[in-house]
Image 1: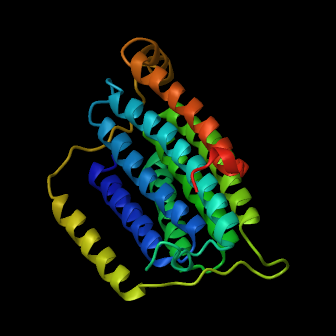
Image 2: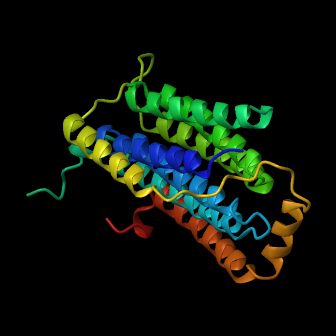
Length: 101
Length: 169
């Protein structure tokens, strides 16, 4: 038997890595990758808790809708990145400084 | 140790190591390929947790769709040709500090002794239950998700089309 705690530790690790990628990397596409990791960590937690009551699959249903929303967010995010690249000719967040005084 | 448990820990290990390697690599293209390994390993964890439908969705949508879309985004937003796509790091010290603090807090919070995960085969079909739930108790959420997908489709096309009249500058 696998302790549920190990899966939860794994989810916490994946979430922290995703957050650190968003904070550290200087690229908009890389920040989207970090976001995907964080959403996957949340899904792993939901599926793990679903195993406490395997007969009701509410956790899996919730994770399914999170996947749908995550895909929408990636598509819109990449469209915005492409538009920003067209306007500023860069995808590094620090160099997009039109609104800075 | 049973074979199922070995597989479970193997998927966790490969996902964790690949995620950590995304953090340390500076090559954008390699980061996307490592993301693919993480997503496939998470799909493996779903299979081990009796979430078969979710695992198939993960492989189809994430590994088949999101990774390809991100690759297109990289190709369309890179100036260089022939050289490796490197990404610079910033705020390394403060981010590492915040990451250590967050994982310490999360592990301290997870002190409750949860029951063990189910590894014995179940006596019901989870895919069948998912289909029935989608058409009965989760029907409203299902329809809202469909509308959200339609809005996303139109929105992404409009934002990236570059038509000056349709975009607020």
